[in-house]
Image (cartoon, rainbow, N blue to C red; front, top):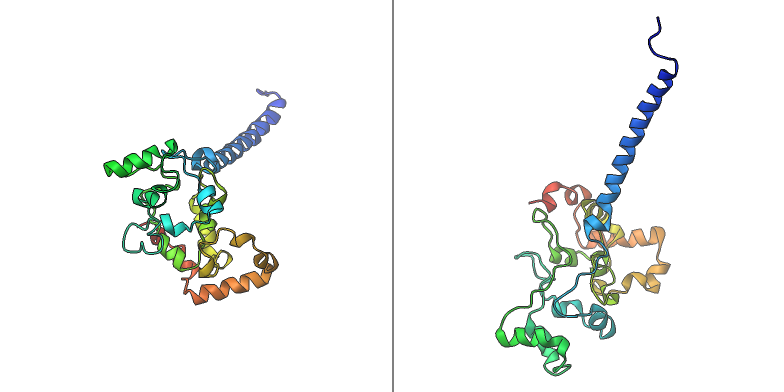
Length: 230
């Protein structure tokens, strides 16, 4: 005696394949959400207590990154931070330029009261991740490689995902991202004519040369867990 109708076999197959499809779709959705700006904070502008424009200061006026981020080259013995500008740095110019601007009242108050400005951190790595700016600078990694074209940002945003897979892409093949040390702080270096003509195998050859010259460690060392997680 047949208990179930023949169509039950079809329904069972559809249920199995449907369940697999739902699981795959759910995994895909979770992966996309994990990579989305909602989760990573990528492309989201951070509002600062002072309306500070990197586009104006770095792009239009050509102020070097190191003028404000003073410890970016020498932070090996400390936290590895690029350093935030002290109010004294701001006032070295703005005690003479725009000295009465209402936009800079917070800066003048900070200077008078000797209290630092509470800047909002844009690139904020988890506490379990160790990152040192100075070692990257000394090995020929440009500012714009991680931070994007800051010189074109009126309000700074996180240009990269900062997820581990993004870091590993560079650590596995650093020769694809290295540049001459003289160009590390040049925001437009990736767009210059020389690079546009120096593509493909020639570019990789130059990257390998720089990797050897700067004594960049092997991919096995750079991708070791203890390199970034200490």
